Length: 130
Image (cartoon, rainbow, N blue to C red; front, side):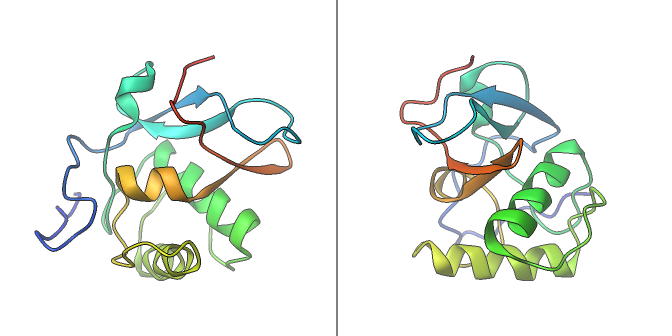
């Protein structure tokens, strides 16, 4: 069960819950290649999705790995968006200077560093599928 974000959330534009991942071009010249982002499908436009405490999917796992390896958070990588994942996300949102509400959506997607193949990178703008 996914808990919908509150109206006060900066990520209130969430269209659907994230259940998959999609690889997109990163914007860091030092990265090993594309980063992966939570998604609802297989295209760049499917990355405007949302997650909150209660979600359980491979997209949550991707978020947890990024929080663990790019932000140094000591959390399980178990695909379960529980209280520890929410707390780690709030901390990462604070680090990135965005609304720290523990809800994942487009604003958070664009601000976070993403972990893939030993590197942490930011999502490219515009996001493109590779």
